[in-house]
Length: 258
Image (cartoon, rainbow, N blue to C red; front, side, top):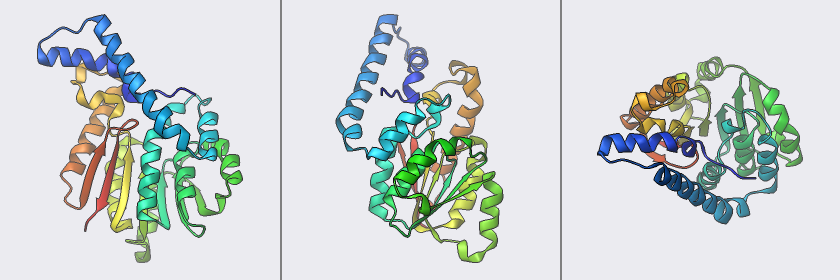
């Protein structure tokens, strides 16, 4: 299955932005050639380093998810590979996931956890999760997952009412409504332990964060501004060590340092 990351979809809009800011003209043929180059580059990475090392349950779930109308919401395979490496480095036992969809990142995390590891997985709807659940069951990791069908903020607030939950999570992954990323971050900085890691998805928002507002598709502009504001918040947050990585649609890795 061919995968094209969201940032490539915005590339045709991004080049006119470069043209305007740098004072030179980008021809249609040059724009097309650049898009093809980036697409080929991405396919090279996927086919050489990502797909050959992808666990069979993840491969199966990726292919099933591709048939869903909202398949672009799934965690990108290259971002997932980086996250799996990160999980294996920090060896978490207790994690939290905000936004589940079909469960691509959830399955990846569950496969990385020890047998007694636990994931609190929060999503306001269960329908998409049911698509991936048979694959999760077949992979033998369903017992690690506590799926909570709810908006995330009430669940996070409930967790924080118990002082025993503060600093008890090793890892968190957030791929949910961008309007609440700031609220999630505030709470996760209390729930995740010092030295723990929080990963935020979609922090490049299709590449539009690097465009002037008028160059971005109108339907992406609200999300673009929310993402820009959130990226600035993270960059100024002294509580975290930060890495903003251009894989998938952009992921930001935050390690809590106090």
